[in-house]
Picture 1 (cartoon, rainbow, N blue to C red):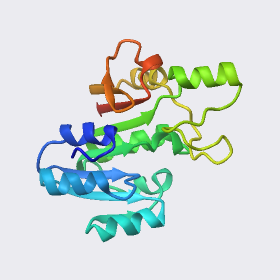
Picture 2: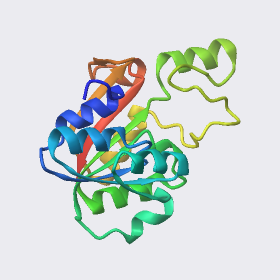
Picture 3: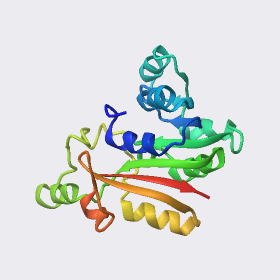
Length: 196
C-alpha cells in the first residue's frame, strides 16, 4: 500500500481486514484495489468520471458511474462497514448532505480533504492576491472542481455542531504526518475517521 497517495495510505492502514467498503469518488480505484488485494475487503465504488470508471473496472473492481450529490440516497442504511470520501468533499454541491449519507450508509466513514487554511494558501492570497496553484491544488480558480474551500477548523466545527464522533484524525504536510497542534495552519491535507 506504499504506492498509494498519502491520505489513501492512512485510510488503507486503518480499515479492518475483510470489511465491506464503499469508496465514493474512488477515482481509478487505487485504494479499492489495495484493500481488496492486501486486506481481503469487499470493495465497491462510485465515481463520476467515465475514464476513471473504465480504469477501475479494468482492474476488476465493482465501480459504477454516479454522482455523490444525487446517487447516495439509493444506498440502504448500514450496508457497508466503511464509507470513504477521499478528496471529494470539497467538490460536492451539498457536502453536508453527502456526509449525512456517508454516515447512514457506512457504520464508519473516512473523509479526507485539502486544507484551504494551510500557510502556503494564506501566503499566496496575502502576498500575491491570487488563488494558489500548487502541486496539491493544481487547478486555477476558473477550472477547479473545488467549490467548497473547507479548512480543518471548519470541518471540526461542523462535526461538533452535528454531534459526530471523531475516532481518528491524521494531518499531512506533503507526504509526512504532522501533529494536530496548529494543524489548521500547518497541514495541507486532513483525514478523519467518523462515527455517529
